Amino acid sequence: MSVPLDQLIRWHWWAAVATVCRLTGDLGAAEDASPRDADTLSLMFLCCHPALDASARVALTLRSVCGLSTAQITAAFPVPEATMAKRLVRAKAKIRDAHIPSTDDAGELVLLEDQDRGRWDRAMIAEGESVLEAALRRGRPGPYQLHAAIAACHSTAASADGTDWRQIALLYAELIR
Picture 1 (cartoon, rainbow, N blue to C red):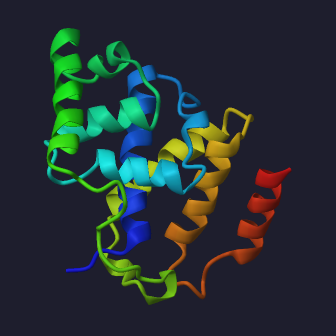
Picture 2 (cartoon, rainbow, N blue to C red):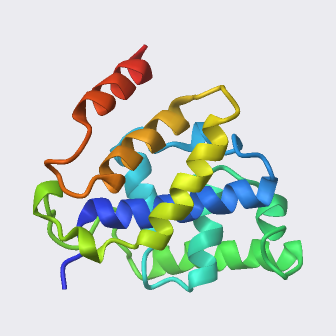
């Protein structure tokens, strides 16, 4: 089964963002953690590799991609900080020892217009939209919120043809301003 690349990105990114916001209680906490380039995206896929235990994937993503400290990550898990630190070390060692590639091996790219939107995780999209709406109510949209708003334009459209491209163009214009 081939999973669309942008669907994988959305699943993992929204999960990390929602976790950061829950951990810190600050809806703007992940504002600077947006995926800015291919290296960040590649790092995110590496941290979320299926060979790693699920709790290690989340912890490693929060540490490596979102920049949270071990103490901040520990707040989301029922384990002592020393245990979390060991978990992170073991996850990094597994990546190194298993020669897990740092590029995306998730499957072939499926263009947005060719995707079956019925297979998208609507609960995850709704959670992402809820976090985005709460962040936008703060009245200080930064790059993270703008990227999330662009993703929301795509994820809420019934089809690729139904995408609000004008809104996306305005959001990108604001992003580069």
